[in-house]
Length: 361
Image 1 (cartoon, rainbow, N blue to C red):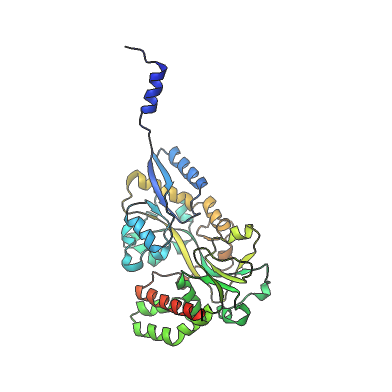
Image 2 (cartoon, rainbow, N blue to C red):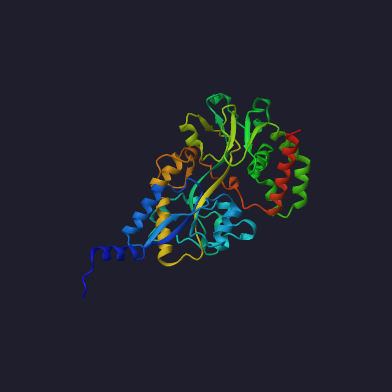
């Protein structure tokens, strides 16, 4: 046999096919899955003999329609859906998911989740939950404590309409449903009153209530606003109060800000982001997804949910969970964002558009 030269060996090595592990495609909101997380998860997978590598896909999650399109297009294996997205608009997204095996031996941290968060009706199917709780928060009002004291803070949502806050408040431009929820709370109604009326078949009552009562209050609230933020909440130093989901607060405060959540007596509307498995996920890849999920509901990541993202942890493993520790009813059922009725969405958009036009006059 002819001897191979060193050059021949090198050329053969270079021409050999590069071996790549199968990808577990993760679809998440920006900041939820860090490079360090991926290293940790992939180390666990390798140690347990899985020829699978978790990879974060782009684009990042940005809203219900975009997430539905990505999941339906089979572009991801694991997603981080906001809970009320799952059964929106005829349950179209839920049909793309599979039920979670909460007893899986690969998910021991599931037993450490806050019990009331694992079986919320809007995330359930006949086969079981379509989600694993991951982290939540409020669409709340945050106060600029560089300019305010505790004694200055509003105690009731109704106070947002007072002259004290005129031109000192910022609300979302695009996420109008939480703005309308603030109006409902100030009027002494449940935050999703219009949606509740419609789902109860009371369309005429919902329209009458909007035209005769809620529209005027929405107009007046919007006239209080100095800036309507789009995309990222506004933390300008000339503001006293800003509406936010809270996820940027830790970073803002680390840069020298001092923003504090306002505890209204009426409470704030709340949301929860979840981990979901695509319906086609099976075999070893499904097992790898369970290992991924278990890590993300473990103590290390759940502590980052609180300290790094200013969110509320869903796990009993964390040592401090400030928003929940100070309000045991933070995740009360009536405050959770629902899977909105399409007509309710249209009514609320019309309310916001009308108020925005009135605010500019």
